[in-house]
Image (cartoon, rainbow, N blue to C red; front, side, top):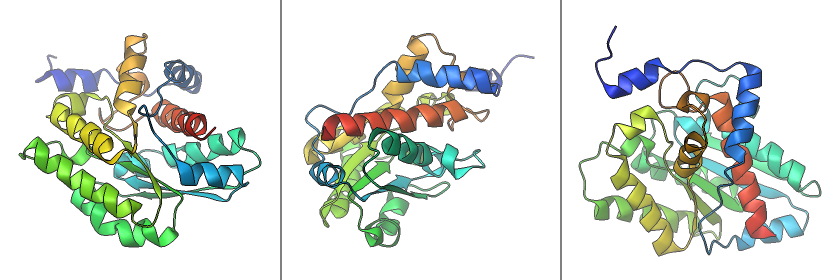
Length: 244
């Protein structure tokens, strides 16, 4: 039967990967070696790891931070991030708090900053932003200002900040994603904070030969187990590279 849209065809082609296939997909994804944006500095994170910790990280965002479709919290990207940082920095005690919430938006995230982020006094905040906001009919300047305001609120207590952009997935690719991507990148540039582009990480993985279904779940939007695994481990390695 013909698909109604290109997105529908892409989603229909996605099937769950077997465990061996998922492990292979994660390794192919990791091999593309996505780093943080050039010039990123994480002074508080570096001080915590050099001092043996504890290093406290809060992962703020929406359902792809919460880890939709993963029943085990350890299989979400924040869970993988904690495991990989612990492996890479065995002398440090790493604590990653998952403050993702299903269907949340930029204003919704900001409204939760005091209770779900700053109350934990984190050394580092990873703010996954923009996935549920791509249908906003606003100017790029308006979007950028909202993200900049959020970054400034997060930095008010001295925390390091990394922005994480949208996922490379059929539902996102069928949206106004380019405007949001530009706004996230511009906010990171203006505020001189880290940008971890999972969009580029996933896109490069597909360019390297992976099917998009290897990193994206059946819904065409959220990450598969391999996708969460790759993102968590790649981010951990990028953080260690900067703080080294």
